[in-house]
Structures are given as structure tokens and as C-alpha cells.
Image 1 (cartoon, rainbow, N blue to C red):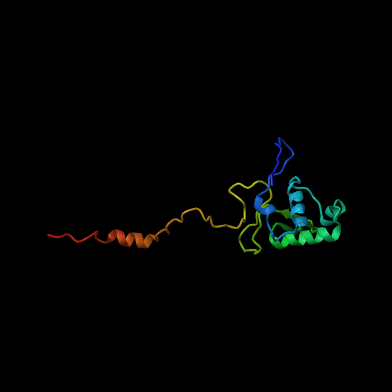
Image 2 (tube, one colour):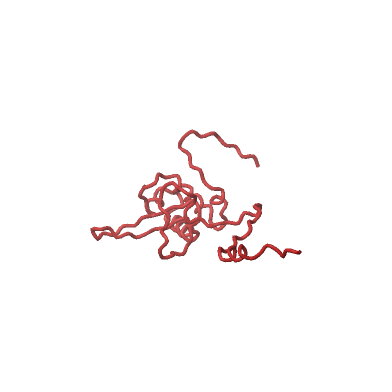
Length: 153
């Protein structure tokens, strides 16, 4: 297979290959995710609006959103506003997010990552040589107090 790519100066989206090759997701779910990630941050759109602009229909979009939610790419939070009203806020991620809510740990915020992908799963690098574990401080102090060796004399 030969892949032909054009050079883009504007109006393009960069996506991780892992997202496009995630075999847990159907092609419909991957396509919907790519479409959602191409949208500007802060855009408000619900599943009904997505389905109405798609040839697949509401059932397919609902199933795709369920797949994306289960895989950690999509989440909807219900937020109570200070005036008492309730609204939904959708979050779309380009890498799967942890499914467990850990108390005291903030969820990733939308926008550009500052220190790396927020909440991304760590994957072992099979090429990198592992580093040695760090010795505990008390053990280092204990070995520093011991004599280095016996003196013969």
C-alpha cells in the first residue's frame, strides 16, 4: 500500500496513530472521534446534533458514543451551576483516560497539555533499558556509617 499525503498549512488536525488503530472501536466510532477532535475547543454539540448531520443516523451515533465512552475517549459530566440550573459538558480525549474516579485527583482540563497527556495510561517502552531502583535514604545513611573494609596490619 502506498500512502499519499498532502502538505497542510492550515485547517488540519493531528491525531495519534493509537487512536486511529484502536481495534476496540468500530470504524464509525473512530471516524466520529476524529471528527469531534477536529472541532474547536468549547463547541457545544450533543449526540442528536451529531446524528442529524451524519448519514449513519441516531442509533449508529449513539452506539459509537457508547463505544468511545467505554474506551475512555469521551465523557459527559453533569454540572450544577451556581444559579441551580444543571447542564451537561462533554469531554473528548485523543488518548484513553482512566475510568476510575480517584478522590482528590483532578480530572484533566480541556485545552493544550502543559506537561504531557493528562491522565494518559503509561505504557512500558520495550526498547528502553530499565533504570536501577533508588535506595531508600535510611539504607544509604546506614551504609555510609559502616567501615569500607578491614585494614590489615
